[in-house]
Image (tube, rainbow, N blue to C red; front, side, top):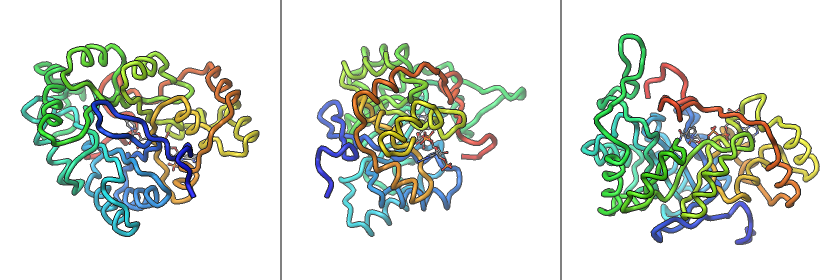
Length: 314
Ligand SMILES: NC(=O)c1ccc[n+]([C@@H]2O[C@H](COP(=O)([O-])OP(=O)(O)OC[C@H]3O[C@@H](n4cnc5c(N)ncnc54)[C@H](OP(=O)(O)O)[C@@H]3O)[C@@H](O)[C@H]2O)c1
């Protein structure tokens, strides 16, 4: 039986009394449609109750269908899962936000969302082309809309009861601080790349102080090699505590107070990634002392997704 104090069951309180986010989240950035369906079902069966989606991933229908089937098969209520999706860069104009939100909701087959994020702080030329480029292949940005303009439209989704919380993704303190200060409805969540090679300590401290949930993507370093999964400190701790390197990285993320998103693609890895247990204090400190620094996803510099295969029509 799972104890409430079990690390796997960690739930982080959300701002404005909007409930809790399960710390262990499953990410759906999976380019293959059939694999999206099986991996989502496997994650639900393994115990994941938090699912991260995006308009840009092009698979909200598959995720929604897999969740519906999995909830029915497992006798799990909608209220028992936490679902997020994200507004894409081409929909930053305030008049496009509600339609983009509703289209995502319809594709997911859901009646409400727990969290809606602005996917990146970069506005692209509005329209149906998710990757608008000029004849030189350069991204066409939209300079006629500010992040605050978009944020105001996000706030009105919450004010009208369309989603429970709203937040930002792929931002640093430079973008978060002014939005936080001007917001009538504060960002409840910030989703950014974070792992021992990119701990984002300053941002995490700000989030803790303000009660914003820090949601780490790529907690396993996106499986890249070399990367945190092969770091000698992580390997040594894994051997010492009898867990896998992935389980060590995920436990560290939860124990430092972040929620996380991981993308296991098989049932065995879903079970492995869900089966975390607390690391001793000295192990946490050793991981905190790792000096290697590496950002894996360049999306924060351009708004162009770093982990979505090039040329994909999403
Ligand atoms: N906001 C943003 O801009 C943004 C950007 C990127 C990601 N995200 C979100 O964050 C989620 C997670 O990101 P991520 O996919 O980079 O997470 P991740 O879990 O760090 O990386 C996933 C990779 O790690 C490997 N892996 C998974 N479990 C493993 C295990 N137990 N042992 C060894 N390798 C393992 C997988 O390999 P295999 O392929 O071999 O299974 C996969 O390639 C995404 O799905 C998405 O929802 C958001």
